[in-house]
Every structure is written in structure tokens, then in C-alpha cells.
Length: 41
Image 1 (tube, helix red, strand yellow):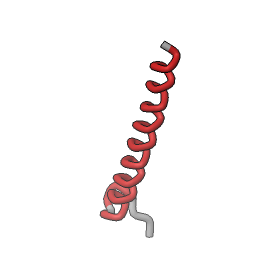
Image 2 (image 1 turned 90 degrees about the vertical axis):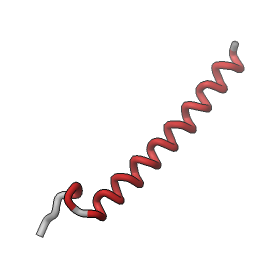
Image 3 (image 1 turned 135 degrees about the vertical axis):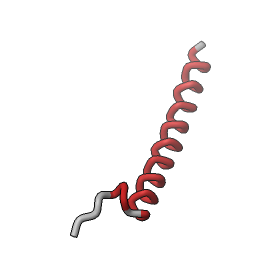
């Protein structure tokens, strides 16, 4: 029995959590990059 992730509530939770973690990680790396740019300037 195989249910697609999109049709199960658990799948939505997993997708939401991973998306949120990716967003936070991207935000942190973006801040570091801008800090490096300001130091060079």
C-alpha cells in the first residue's frame, strides 16, 4: 500500500518541516554572505 506524500497529512507535515528548515538555512547563509560583502567594502 503506497500513498503519495501529497495526499497524506503526514506528508504535508514532512514537506512543511523540510521547507521551513531549508528556508531558515538559506536565510542564515544569506546573512553571512551580506556580512562578508560589507566587510570587504
